[in-house]
Amino acid sequence: MTIVELLVAMSIFTLVALSLAYTLQMALLSTRDDRNRVQAANLAARELEIVRNDFGATTTGPATLGATSTVTNPHPLPGGTSGQPLHVDGTYYTVVRHVEWLPGGTGTSPCDGGAAVRYPSLGVNVKVTWNAMHGTNAIQSNTILTPPKGTLNTTMAFVAVKIVGASGSGLGGVPVTLSGPGGSPVVVSADDGCAVFSLTTMGTYAATIGTAGYVTFDGQPGATKTGIAVTAGSLQQVNFTYDKSAALTAVFATDGEHGLPTPLPGLTYFNQGLVPLGNRSAATAAVSTTLSPLWPFSDGYSVWAGTCRQSDPTTQGHSRPTPVVIVPGGTATEALEMAPLSIDVTTMTGTPLVGYKVFATPSDPTGCTSVTPLALGTTDATGNLLSSLPGGIWNLTVKDALGNYKTLEGGVLIPAVTGISNLATPALSVTDPETSMTLRVM
Image 1 (cartoon, helix red, strand yellow):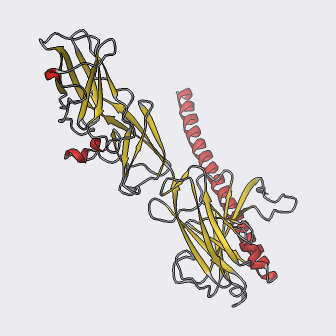
Image 2 (cartoon, helix red, strand yellow; image 1 turned 180 degrees about the horizontal axis):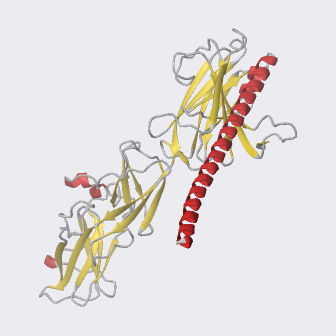
């Protein structure tokens, strides 16, 4: 019993000790986190105080401070290096300072207000982070610095560039370059999408955006707007529609054992925002084709096989495929289901013809990027061929094994034969019935 009592006592002691150790460890972590937050708050306050001193030290202080929108660790501690993290009590802190001119206007930001610079001020945001934050939020401090009234608005001008994303809201983090007689400063758009330039040299400027992985509304990787006339005391506003590009991978598919034609018929993608017609076509050299860069429309893209107008499902009284929505910076995959087709090639008496090749050309070539006949394949031992086509009405031609064109039933020469008029929408599911027909060769 003594041994049992000893084991029980040791177990209880161990549980209590572990609980106390865990509590002590959590207390130490909490104390350390609190100490780090206090230190971060002190560093943020230090940075704002230095900024205030620089802002009011000279008449050129405001312009100098506002010339650079974002800087990291601009004021090192004694013994430190500018641009490197600040080392305090074994912890490394990163101080990021963002400044933005706030010319007096009627809107929520310089990008939304009026054109007159009534009373310019400077908004300053300081954000401090550190290593081993353990989920703690960064420390942020903000202030607005205003020079004496009339100091700047008679000698300076401002250009406010608004970056609007696919959602219709402002997009932050986009570098904007303003080129002109005063140089080529670069300002990164703030969280509201606004990038403000302060200028002391008047003249005509050009605003440029161009960031890898981004795209304009019309699908370009960058854009420039010229002819921005800058005069003292004015605020010029420029807007760009810009966001992370999207990509769409389209994969041709058909029903069961049915093959795909060669060459592939290309594809069409639609969104009413695409200018000028709402749709664009793309040639395809492989079963899987990626379209990029694309503007990430919030209502997505409808995609179907074929580039001819007759392949548009609406020309056959059908609805277009359900749009594929792609988030900015994302990639989506869409299957391009083509209509299955079964063709029997026989003699006039019904004898199967083996090794005969069948080709298809669109009855209406309007909009086609290519009028090259689509090879549907070669008949098998039963004279049958299983293939597929985009929607539309197609003319068929037949060649024998030697490559000679053949005449069809009734003496009508190819390609006057038509008849695949009942192909459904290209978004045909694999359970839909195939189109069947017999070509009789004389």
